Image (cartoon, rainbow, N blue to C red):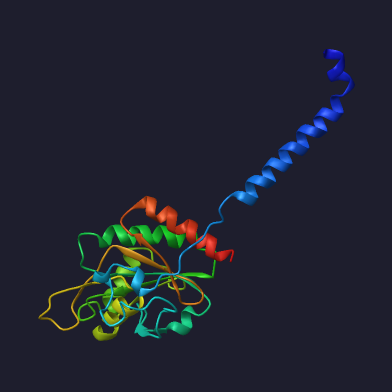
Length: 221
């Protein structure tokens, strides 16, 4: 038996290597390819979507917008053209989920600090109090990098409309208060074609790992 292995040693090595290669190729061919859904209003919890668009099942994209950031600069969809970005809704005096969300979004900022294709966009749900000066102080406190992350304020109706009709991510507030809304823990992933590709719990570290993985995936597409 030993003499047999010695005689055919190289033949057996070649067979083993080829078998390993073939099995690997079969595995890669049969392994399901990673996919990210393209979210439309009909796929999302109706509580987070304006009733006028809940029926829409395809071709949903983020609408044009214009807000003012922490530096007093007007930020529009043109600043995010061709970008992959994460959007969320917060307010600077929030003492519950916002601190965790901001800390976690800062981690996402750090993960893509050298990737100009990835940006962040945080909207205040209390624009009446979160003015430019307040947002600037909040940005400094939380390590916001101006070229990577915009904290924006503006017309409350427009923010409401973006939250409910574009990002599909915010619940209604008090019925008696016009354009009132309750921000959620949702981070919304948007691709270069302005399509919603994912929702993530911004308070959980494990969700940030998933978000970073999905951003990396979109970067390769």
